Image (tube, rainbow over all chains, first blue to last red; front, side, top):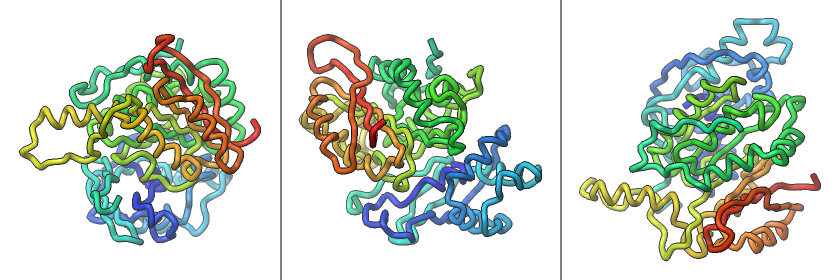
Length: 127
Length: 247
């Protein structure tokens, strides 16, 4: 799964939804892969309008990527800097979490990721 | 007519095969009234790509259709598509159907993100979904199958296959048990501009369902925007659009 996708996901446990600790989920024992996806500069800059930049920073740092700046780059900055654009495209869209776990910072539940598919089904005692 | 995505790679022993209900969703979403609604609701000038979520995509035919034909449906291809299915085989099939359809698309299509395994909208952060599509298990049944495999390995292959297929159609009382849970979660799942398309059959009593939604707090609207099937009997199908506000 893409790191961009992680920006839309949280713990499936109802009681965790209202806690700020349940987002973003924390990758553990992560194995990453790279997909090749054609860069769409307009879509990429527009995506920045809707993602939680701080959550992306946390995810990137936890996966060992170089630290992202405190603020999302502006459209002008991205258009002027092809490398920045490519790096962000690579991080958000090309990088795939293939194996590992996603851990909730609130309840500690671990969601398994296998072959790029995360499993958010809860055991019956947590539903 | 817009092309229907190819699903020939999907294992139909484990995943619901596209049927009349799936095709009604395709026809409705690409109808003139719905494309004009989507285009005015999510214009390219917003610069904020809508997140499209299909719950229970099965083969992926519907979300693939939306992603690949974004230019016709939304008037632009600046969309993000996502899917949640309880069935792991569907989670494998759906991205493949979507990527193939986008690849075949002459207009390029939107960006398909991922499919994750989960129960309805429970893995989603609140207020993120702009368009939600749900073709539920709507057939009235006495009981519901379990969401996770009941037994361990000794449970037969046949039992597991029938459980997965049952999950795709068995709706419990009035065929509404799963749909009710999805509807309950809509106000927190949808963004302010969010809209849901939910398929119902006559046995689900769509007129009563719409009345209940209109009584929700916050000015909700519910209208039938597509119809098909036999003129009588519980299998007659309709698509209800659910959204907030005056437009």
